Length: 107
Image (cartoon, rainbow, N blue to C red):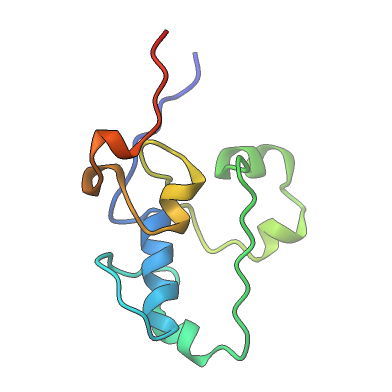
């Protein structure tokens, strides 16, 4: 059976958005990542965010050990629940939304 991972809301993709937002002069309710501070973002000449939806840390460690991506990896962060890209991009987690805001299908 596959190992179950739970979100770490102190080290997750929302904290990545916190680092980016603060570093680019925006406001957010989420703390920045410890492995990527907002000061590092402020100092950058260019900031590019590439989202590879579905590419997880474990997959990368198993199948991309010698890849360019791994050579620049700073650490592991978790996703959020529910793990949908729009939650991360728009800086929202499930706890700050109402159930009606999410599309859910229950057969």
